[in-house]
Every structure is written in structure tokens, then in C-alpha cells.
Image (cartoon, rainbow, N blue to C red; front, top):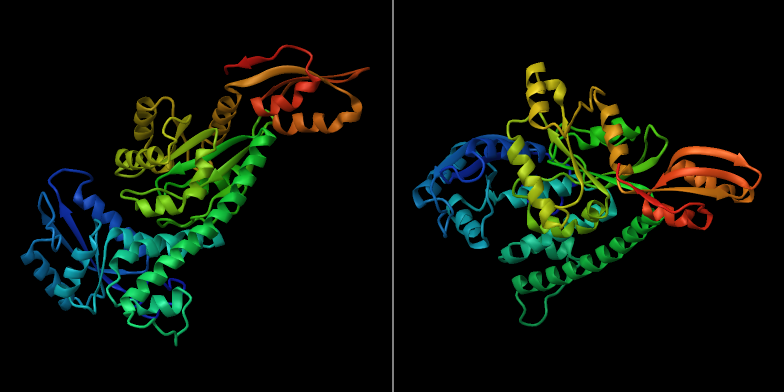
Length: 439
């Protein structure tokens, strides 16, 4: 995290930030404060900071002016001075006025961030594709707009398109100009993202027309989704033991044991208190999840907050409208459990798949489960394909399950099980009435 300009995450950081983490214990509501701050520490470390100290205050309702009580805020300021901290990170969202008041108390040479700002910084560091960078830019600017206080002149010159010698309009303050230019840039980003989203939608429609069964990996950040994608498909997606290592949706083809091909898409990981602005900005990426036929909910079986993490994922899935989609829970990293722990987990979750993507254990069970889910609701039919329509036979072998195949004087007779979309393409060659296969 650059200590002077959060909007230049790609800049090489010569000085490492020293962070103080701040949390409010609301007396048993939500995650345990120790676990939540442990995750905040991981986030800060992912963003490149070292931890200089931690402050916890127990209170049911945060102070409307400074979030913490007045005495605790002054104690925080003293700790920041004594530890030479460069940033203070709150585990909850701060209002613009709370952030401004805290900066006045702690000192303007120390940045005050909330959880949302920290996550935005990490997303900015890890965004690689044009779409990912646009999405992060939009979320950042929408976050900072209500927080402009005349201290964001670099936005005008470096981020919003104005030259360093740009003049303000007659009687227009720098703050007013910053706000106007920020809104203009937000509008430009939304237009660009709309165009990118339309291109992605065309790709999704093409895959839908092909009749290929679509599987989407969802789960808490660092649950091992990218590792699982690599293990199943031989993809070369970045894998790192940190939060939000990858942001861009990656789609690969997976060959099932029965010969059918499906697509497997890895999307951005979720997290507790995921900023709503990021959910909105990443809508086109998350549409990959919305359009999937099956969700694989990947869970870190070795984690201490498994249930809470699963609840956080369910919350985001509900927010994007896919809560009712067919879903298979996949407990990953089971190699880190004892045999007894694995047995208990298996008995508690008999419909889940237990595996270790990094060790390559249990992958065949997952492939078989995906094949069973892909067959559920498929159309079984017999088709007779003339020999001069060999491309249809090739399509059947690539995307359908072949039950039987026979070469006759009139052409190739195939008994197939296919998705409804693919079955529609076989319709002109059908010999029998279609029957839905319930698995």
C-alpha cells in the first residue's frame, strides 16, 4: 500500500507500511473479534504492510463521530506515534466523517483506512486484465467520491485525465473540480465496463448455444479454487497462499470419465464484509456464476471459521441472485486433517465431496459427481446421422454422453444423453421420442 497515493498500486513500494489494526467487539455479534482481526492481519500482509499493533474496544454501538470512544481514539493516536505507524486500519467500514475526524485526532501523516479501502487496495494490486482494472478503478472512485476533502489533487492530474497544468473554471474550487472530474471518470468507466460486459455476454451465449454443461467454482478467498482448477484441467492459473491472489474469471474445459466435456470457471473469491461496491463493479465477472449450470462451493476444510466462511459466501450468492442454483460442497485441503477429523466431516456432510487439490486426492470422486450432476435433467435420444454430416457425430462425441454407437447403411446411429440445448441441435436427426434422464 503506497502511503501517499492509493490510486497507484502498481508503483514499486520503497517503504513498507506499518499498520495498526483496530476492531470493535460487539459482544458476540458476528465473527469473534480475534478471528476477524486475524483475517484483517492477513489482508494487511497481502497488501504489503507489517503489523505494528492492535487495538480492540468492546462496545455495542460504535461512536457516530469517531467510531471508537474518545478516550480510545486518543489512545490509538498515541500508539500510532509510539510505533511510528504509517496507517491505521479499521476492521469495519467508516463513514466519511468518522474517517475525517479520526485523521484529525491521529494526525494527517497517518492514513486511516477501513476494511473496504484495504480490500480495494489489494484488488488494485492484483488486477491484471483490462476488465479487472476497470472494475477496481470504478469501485475505488465510487468509494473515494464522498471522502473528497480538497486533499485529493492527485486525482485530477494523475487519475482523471486532467493535465498537471489544468486550470479550474472561474470561481471553482479544487474540491469542486475534483468531485466533478471524479463523477465524469466514473461515468466513463461505467460505459467502458458496459462494453466489456457485452463482449463477455456474447462469449457466454456462444457457450450456452454449444450445449456444454457449465460449472462455476465459488468459495471464500484462499479456499483453493485456483489450485482445484489447475488440478482438474491442467490449467496454469496463478496460485498463491494469500487472499485474492486472482481476480479474473478463468474458464477451462474439463473432460469427464464418460467422454463428455464441461467448462469449469474460476471466479473471484468472496470474503466476510465484501464491499458492496466491489460486488457491483465485478458484476460482469460474477455473471459467469449466474449463468452456470452447477456451482462447486469450495471450502477450506482445515480452517477455523468454516461455517462463518460458508455463510459469507452464501450471503454474496444471494446478493447476486444465484442462491437457489444447484450446488455441490467441496471440502478442500483435507490432507491437513487427521483421519478422525475427515471421518467426522464425512459423516456430517454426506453429500459433500472431500478432497485435497494440492495432493491430488479425491479428484476422481469430484469428476464422477460433476458427471452425475451434468447427466441430471439431460435428454436421452437416439439419432441417425447421415455419413455426410460427420460434424454432428463429432459434436456428439465432444459434448454429449454416448450410450451406444452403430454404423448402418443409412448413417451412424447414436444413443446419446445431452443437455436440452444440445439435444435441440440433434432434433433433425432424432429417431425416437426424447426422454428426460433424472440421473
